[in-house]
Amino acid sequence: MMSAAATSLKNKAYKNMLAKKNRRRAREECQRRRYKEKKIHRRKKKEAWKGLMEELEEAGRQKETRKFYRKVNIIRKGYKPRIGICKDKMGNIVTEKKKVLQRWAEH
Image 1 (cartoon, rainbow, N blue to C red):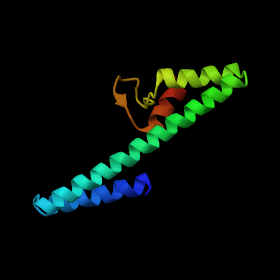
Image 2: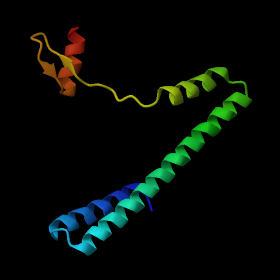
Image 3: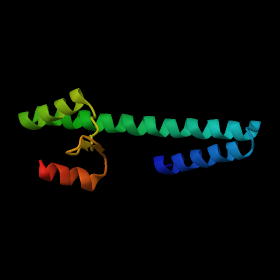
Image 4: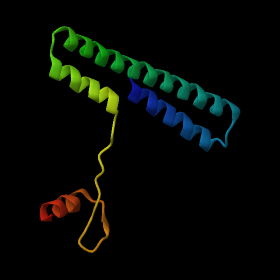
């Protein structure tokens, strides 16, 4: 079962639980779906890390130094979400993508 499908089933079970005023069967169904969803996500994350490690080992074996250290830095630094905000000339915070791009173009 795909992770998106598991997530949608879990969300349906959650909405069903809320609609039924937390009846026991609905709550248990929601908990069961949440467990399955988390299990799928854990498995996918483990597979992704395993693939990354295999790429890293392959780059190390083939003496591809640049590729190897790029992968090492990806692992070491982790995920950093991009910040899409800035301030306009008046000091107000701008969050809309188009306005942020305009502001950077002005800068």
